[in-house]
Length: 242
Image (cartoon, rainbow, N blue to C red):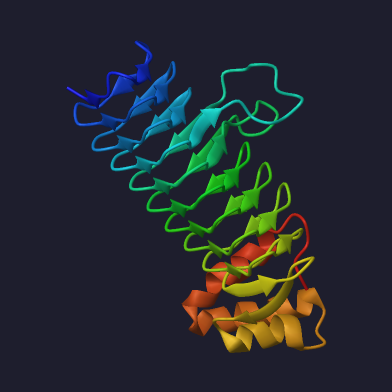
């Protein structure tokens, strides 16, 4: 059976794998499903509908799966879905989705969310992401795999940050950041990229965006790692940092 501290409160409507550990004064609410080998620390709160995969660690005073911070929310049964091997450090907050959005907030695998980070409603996070202390994500934000956001950085609602992007500390992301780009500032501006040639084409040439994309598309034929960069540009919805 799950090892539940006698001072914890676990709803009879929750489902816990046999090897889950729940610390003192933690609260597990209705319609929460917690997978194998998860550890829920003392004073942590997990409300539902929420599903946690395997090997997740939720540290003290973190809050997962509570109602979205949205005035339009009227108590609808939206949800939070979390994959495997994620770490949620102290005072981390992750809200469920809204019916006006996707109805679900999704977090992939192997992510690390450090102290006081906030993930707003309807966000979608990929895999192997690091959110440093006090990173704030507005609603509907999308992060690709391997994104790193430094301390005090924030992302505006509906912003997209592509795979392998690096966001500097105290940065305000108000427009979409393509994959591989290092961005910083208020508002965020591109500073460099892992592929120097692609960065020059998009940000250092005098080409119009359509012309730059045409060149990058041609480059991607011989450099497959640029395909994710080109694909992201085509899906941008809030214009690019440029």
